[in-house]
Amino acid sequence: MSPVADQRRVYLDGTAGLPTDPRVLEAMRPYFSERSGNPSSIHFFGREGRAALEAGRKSVGELVNAREPKEIVFTSCATESSNLAIKGLAQRNRSEGNHIVISQMEHMSVINTCKFLQKNGYEVTQVPPDKEGIMQLADIEKAMKKETLLVSVMWANNEIGTLQPMEEIGRLCAEKDVYFHSDAVAAAGRVPIDVQEAKVDLLSLSSNDIYGPKGVGALYVKEGTRLESILQGGGQERNLRSGSENIPGIVGFGAAADMMRAEMASETARLGVLRDKLVKGITSNIKETYLNGSATRRLPTNASIRFLYIEGESLILNLEMKGVAVSSGSACASKTLEPSHVLRCIGLAHEEAHGTLQFSLNRWTQEPDIDHVVAVLPEIVKRLRDMSPLTPDSLKDG
Ligand code: PMP
Image 1 (tube, rainbow, N blue to C red):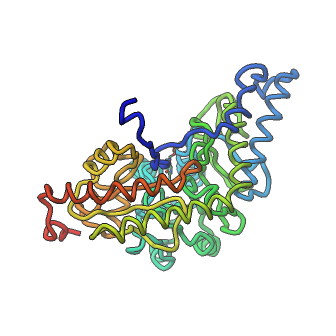
Image 2 (image 1 turned 60 degrees about the vertical axis):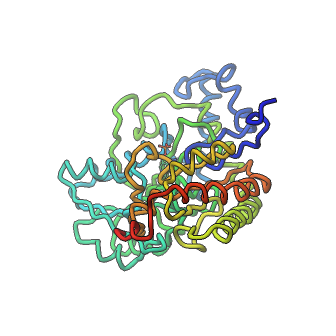
């Protein structure tokens, strides 16, 4: 057998995509074939489809503690959910205000939706987090004005894993009578999410990020929130999202949500220990490596580490030769050469952002995987640093 085939393969790039859990796949299977009825049909096949749709809605609603299942609207992905939330709210409520406040560390699905609105007469203020990657309430409050319609702050950041003070932001928005949207893609199933406690009006979710299938997302829409649909068509999903429902996907999303709820406590404890072992194993064995973002207010599954004086891309390629898959900067945008906007907005220099690796652990990560990464990295880093033109002076632009 070739040495490469024999080698351990370690997947620590969960933010870029996750396998669908085999149990989820099993739950979905009949809905591709013998149970493929359209929920809008009135015959028994239709009733079967409708029951599956409503069961999925109930499960996803329970994951975020929605008051009622009908507050969940299924979409094709979290990007669509955030487009519907932000554009739908802005367009429907324009007479109440045209100003939107977002954090600077949002996913591009929020930032670019807001840029689109800016071209159409809305005003957007981007508020930076502190150096730890945490949003400060006073900064959000300062950015708000009488025209502010909406505040959008992600529950957890997908790159550096930091968790935001959702209940405080929710209280502030409620006091000021401003809508509150949150992208909870990275947080869902990893930390408890309670839309009622956090006084969230709109919340974006993605199935694949909780080991469900790709191609399905959801938007929690608090009862009474006025939204305009961004797709015109047959009026499915209470007129908010036209198009035939993706029943196998929704069944899978529901099964994944149930599993996340049942296993969250034990899994987050297990993965938190492994994540800490990884961070300690790297930062205490390799000089000038640092964890990005708060060490305490973070997801249990994530570690973003900067390796001074090296390019993240060279690290990725060298790690790949040792069977390890990770990403640099933003997993979603890692094809671009721009340094991650998230790493830049917490104050890192270009070179520090470029020298960052993002590790995201998943349900199948085991201790020997972490041991393998910790064992192979020092030699790779030494070799790359020996060849690197970067010096302490090159880090001074931040
Ligand atoms: N928000 C966050 C925080 C993400 O990590 C991602 C990508 N997984 C998205 C939004 C976009 O999700 P989707 O690919 O389902 O549109």
